[in-house]
Length: 90
Image (tube, rainbow, N blue to C red; front, side):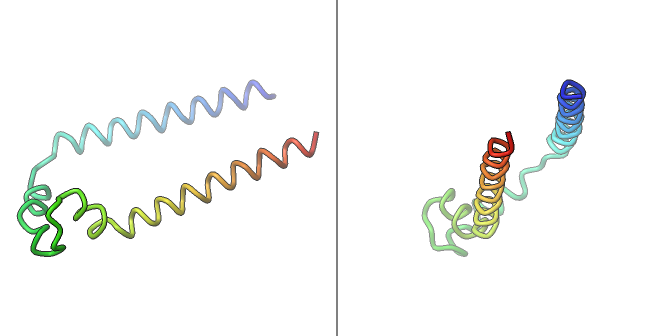
């Protein structure tokens, strides 16, 4: 039973990798530089930051970064919780 579970997880991961790679290739072929031009032309006027990376990271993507960190924290806490509970049950 344990071997079947590992095989199932590998198949699901391979399927997700395939879907992700197909989506990435499709989006890369349709890429245009309008968004990068927008940030280059307007980042100083909108954020008053001389550095483009800082302007994008701390102004345009601030909430995205906060939620990414929160999601990472929840996932890490869940993994630690599940890892500790499986050790106690043995």
